[in-house]
Length: 444
Image (tube, rainbow, N blue to C red; front, side, top):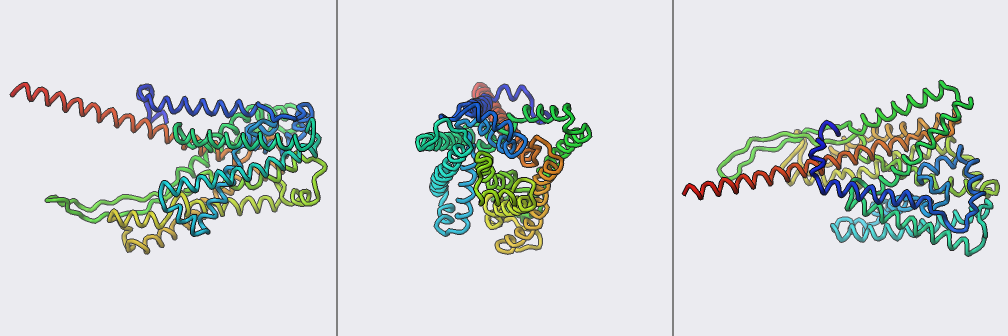
């Protein structure tokens, strides 16, 4: 970013500064909300419980909720109900013809789908909040258990999730970067100092050997470098444009490349897969020793580090990588139609249906590498954490989210700076044209 940007240009970009300050302001509001507790919680019991659970499941949940769950703040559910609702709506859009038709109606259809997603968010957040309230009562963390406590908890947590959803939409529309991703990013980064302090404290006490500490830190650095490399990796498809005539001029044929990212879906599959695994973990963490037989069996086979958990996590990552790519980020039919409308074609491939089939073939083969990369990054720290008993969630999902969101936000900042520089060049050329016009009239 520093190589492609001058701080002088950044200082002149007033709109970009306003967007950045607006984004920072809303993220500060989010962080303050994580410290506002849900009414009716026994603070002493909750603090004692989370100290015991921090090395296990509680550490995972803390990472994805920005610490709000450990403090039982009003944002304890985080943004995960909205992400889960988005998953369900996108799946239904691919299967239900009416929703698919809505998606093709442009802005109006997109607004209706967004509205359905919000309704789904309210339903899922209500279900999760009620389950969490019952779990808090079962775990003895409620100061005054009963229906009043459950109602207050459900209303507070659902309201907090809807407010977070609104914050994310405002950041996306009026700030810099994707609002939902930035909320998750800030929650992860905010917990890093405390998690690192706990990790190094375990090393000083002798619970973890210095060799393991050095190895984990090297693994994190190598993972970050690997993620940056893979996120920038492209498969270029050669595109040829024929010779064309505009008026009396004939323009020679041009060639360009259609870039296909190795991971077109970005961090979305990892977030989707993690959100599906957080609900049973949340309920089991707070229900403690009074977990029911069904939940006990579920956690015995699907707990973090268990073989079925790893298998389910891998399958969900692979599924969402293909699903999100073909339905959202890289629609081969739309790309083929756009190339046909622009008179572009792949050498040796007929425009239209044949081009779409060729793009399907290329993207499918590329996604084998992309989905394998995502699964490797997300699963390798999980396996190491369960084997080495590291009391800090050095998750590949967390590293993937932090690196991807950082790169995406920097790219958007650079785009705004380029747009501002182009506007400045256009204004200068217009001023020069006016001055020349004035000098010409004076000579006449």
